[in-house]
Image (tube, rainbow, N blue to C red):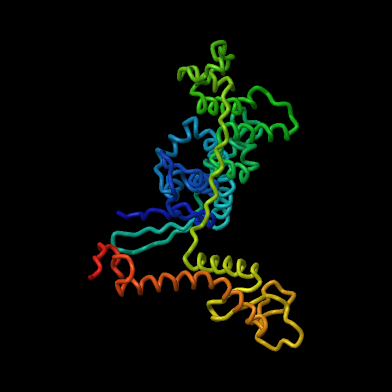
Length: 369
């Protein structure tokens, strides 16, 4: 009995363009906006649901759960639109098989391998026919028109999904394209939009009732005493508007020690220049930013009309600084000399009793007789 090897998986060149990406941050159900987008792109390129889920590292069950949930309304619309795009991939593969056929390898019990070339694409043609019915403009399915509109602008729909937009955004997406089509919308055409609106309403207010809500007991001035049920009705009635978040405080980068030292040096330099004459600890000399007198041949930096100009003092300026310093220091020197004379007298026993010296933190030692 011959053992027939399993036929190679149904593949196409376009199907290899997607590979499982690096897992990104997930929300509580794992389906981030980026994963939803990659999943829809995989479906549009002809991948099966199982393969598309493997690409985004999610399970098929979770994909169907999101598709059937209110929060997945836009995801469901993109799913159906992606299947229409997959029709083109399947059509290309069938065209390839129609012209070139399919090679099947058969292995006999004795180990001989036989390769057969055949043209049998009944199942694939049936799949193509199924997708053709979906794409048929005369289809009476209420969701078909919405899916065709979404498939026509599939890239824009992917951007909508990638932003994790609410179902209402998907409804606006469809409504705008339905209006651009120029035809008067029927009740059936509006059904998908109403479905998206109900899904959005449910997510926001946990109610999908269409009749007006009773707001007689909803006094905004008394909102501090509202119950949880009243808050739900107020939000459903449009009485609640969330305040925009406060802008984040500007983050000031931490100043490094080098930057702090440079800043302090610049501040000190600016303060010195404001005095016109200052002591430069780096050069251990007096400096000035006065313009040089005629005949000046000393050391100078930059040009006199520049802000960073400085030079050494002339002999006349140095004498003036010395005289100024002498006048400023005279009172301190006189006071210090007076204290010195008193200290000497105390050491000789000529002054008041007391210790002529002491260490910090020690008690005073009585003076010797």
